[in-house]
View 1: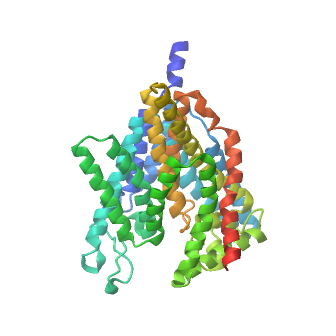
View 2 (view 1 turned 120 degrees about the vertical axis):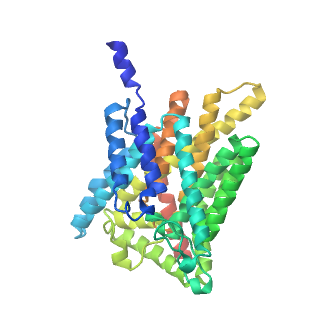
View 3 (view 1 turned 90 degrees about the vertical axis):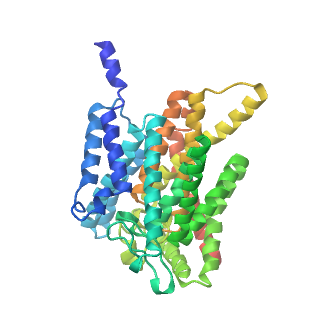
Length: 444
């Protein structure tokens, strides 16, 4: 009986992961939306319910981590904020959305991806979906009225002037969302390229070239800046010391605000973005405790903030932004600390001629990949309001799963994946808002 109980405690629930795989394919590839007869099918909802049910019933152990509690705490806060601001029913609707498109995916991805093999499978789905989006976008460039082969997809922009910004199905019908997804997949392509041999390297190099081609076709300046900045961040992380890296992190929002300010002199949309940022900061200052209510930024200002960080702070106030920003920064910071340990360990290996365990080295390499995918969101999210996009919580869940596996492989890593670091991250996330506010005060 004791042996049987112990076996159950370690179950990984293949069925739960199978349905999570189907959910991932449905969300990213969206095959049901490619045909008129199946466009109304609720396959996405069915798969996540089945994945959740199978995981809860069969997977052991199941744990809630700091990021889970942070996002869960947003649910009552959003409801309470809504009622305080006269939009109670909107708050209830928004809180339900957080449960479905944020907490459930975050919980499932972080708990079900219990091996590198499972992670590879989902990464392959992401890259396959990205290639379909790029090919559909390529077709849109020459097709009549910019139509793609995917049902009902059209390029947007002034087609008569040659502007054809590519789109895809579902929430990828905005070039900015599509571009964000492509940027977040660049590290995946590089990861498989480095692990490949000979002919496979050529394939993965072609995939990487296709991603950059797709980014170009989106016509999104924030996406293009995100792709370029991602390369710069890689060299900074791998070569700069921790202190220099933290200084750069604090200065990065200021640099981004300065860039937007320079664009505003020649671009009306950039000028409107700066005004929206400043309006968001004022909303936060006037409603610091519970914000103006989730979903109310557009009602108050007439435009979205075009900045995920400002948008959350304005709508949910100090507690809400601390929770959302804390979950994001905690996951990214943990990934960075693991990378710094890996660099230090590599130097030790070179000096002492020792060899690290292969499984641990493989997991650290994967963690580095997932870290840079999150950085891709953090950069592109600075220029668009996508604070609760499903993409964020899929990639957050993948990163958390890698952190969990690393701690199991070597308990020394637990110091970076602790409640103490989580609390500090809820404070660190405010450096972004403060930096933007200072830049706006100096530039406007």
